[in-house]
Length: 579
Ligand SMILES: [Mn+2]
Image (cartoon, rainbow, N blue to C red; front, top):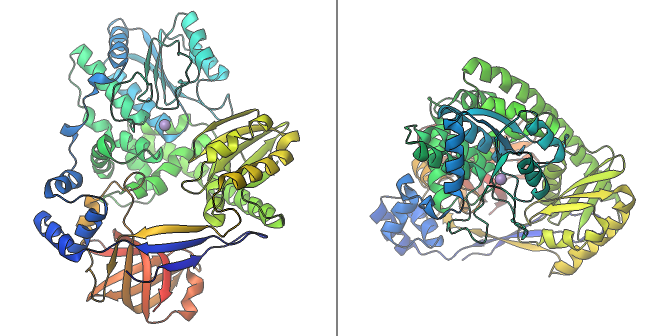
């Protein structure tokens, strides 16, 4: 094991800088080679799998080729049968069904899945989604008004509803049977819905708790199909399940791994639904390019979220449910314009928040930026960018009139929810979890919240005033007497990667044969690694160009180079140094 490399990160005025330490995991070349040989892989992949606790050939094969046939039986999912029975009856009797979902990707995809399936099975279906600007998250009063105007007999809420007791009760009192399909936190007070599907219900026996609403919606659709004795191929909806699951940062393990692997193939397919084809075109993804979970998270999901952030998320639903490519391209073009605007709004908010935080000379453990110039649709993304920059918890608050709408993000492992909850006396509303949280605060309390949040973060961070050192594991060393490079096709077998299945990180030693600055900001390298040519891309690393040596050591991910194609692979540089 070599010396761990430590990379400094930008700090805030008055704060010690956070540091990242790259730690090479123990290497076992003999066992790795043996496992790799048995599974037909490159030795370096054997090492990656050993690091993940996969030691036996059979376990490796199950991991590399997950099968839909191995999905958990849904029989133990509480209220699934009741929901299917009610929806089947509505279809048989031609009762109006409204499918209502939240405005994010999991909400819009789960709504599209259920609406399309129920319609294909003969239902009289209307679909709509929540709006950040008209009532906000979930089944709000405003949303219920819009739902009731459609005069449904049955209402299905997707990706929301678990904590909307009052509206659910009101709908039922008005004669509407409410079915809730959700995976958010379950309050202790019983929900007055006719059926309440949520794997987090304490009385739900379904063992896999990581399903998001898109996965649940597909399962409900399958149950309705079975109840009606109908034939309908549901595999065509796995693309939407993959979009919802990846965008919602659900764990890409167990059932989700099989669903998303199949869904990624569908998303890449030339027989993809019109909305997906138009979305791929907008993201300039060439036909036939195999999509990874990272592609979905960074290229497709932001576009699907854009309409809900700045305008009407019904556009996203229209795109996903488009029946023709012509229609889909028209909607995608509108979304593309909104997404461009979203980027510029987000840049503006992030820069202004950054300036505000840097102007504050007080040493802080938790940061808060607030302004009437911030847009509430992008405060979450801005907070995430500021966490990347400062490696400490951040709240960004958009002030509108009397109220501030805030969003919080924090470094991995930090108890963000507890930090915000401890400021509850200053808040009008708050919710979420450690990965992301939202809050509403009266303007008169923002200054106090800044101090209280900082104090809470100080109490909750074990490091106290010491510099924060973040350990990041490196899976294997490649080049110069260490492992050789893997093949591009093998890298696809690890997909989907992200939450619950992190992309492996490699230390790569090689000879630089060329270097270029790309678009003034980024660094592109040509490396010779163990007799093979590899390109490497360093995001915003152009300033390293002038002083770069010949023999380099980099830490980064390896990805198939879909631009060069074939077996070419590209390294994404996370950290770079001369040796
Ligand atoms: Mn969700």
